[in-house]
Image (cartoon, rainbow, N blue to C red; front, side):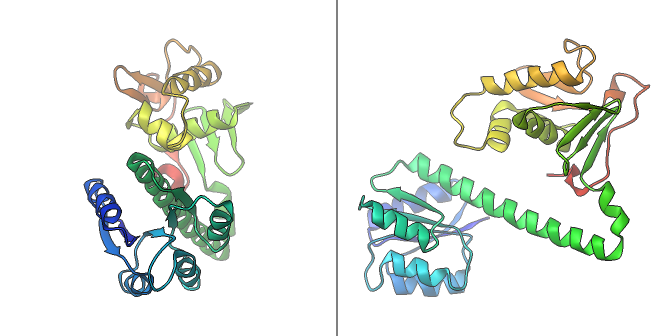
Length: 265
């Protein structure tokens, strides 16, 4: 459960944010004072801080500056002021995002999710980089086998951003590649269009779920022998899509395997 610290002296706003964030499954603490908030942050080590600009004892800009001296916690800054200089200064001091009051609760929650997801991805990348460094020091040759997803005669190379089908390179657009890689990493799982939009296009994409269907059709035209009878990308009617090895439909194909850590999330 992610921990969120709300720093705002307006009780109605702080309590409304807390109520809605708790409903989303977050653990929430409120502080209405800048100096007190720094003590809470040092003690509780929150995963994200929602920080108002106008605070008693210490303003939000000074709180942000002090937090950044010892923490990389994501900071979403709130303010009733609209001056561009305040926004720029807040971002330059280390805030990750900025919203002006009044704001939409749905947008706040969406931004909180996105910021936490980016932090999680950064932590994952850092851990992977450390793992790669460890492999490089102990077994350099093993690096060449990392981040390759093999599914029958289809090979996806995450490092080189290439796809081979029967040892022939297939040209994919960036989002086509991202979608194929995500499906392959979650092989055997039924993924809804909404999940694919959120994870491949990110939460702020406004094109609608139709774009998922279009990209699936483009992928099938490039990787399936017969797009109308797919071996790899299967439609789960009324739900979404599932990636499976071609071997489940054609015994002549080898089972899907992954030689790197990206076979998971």
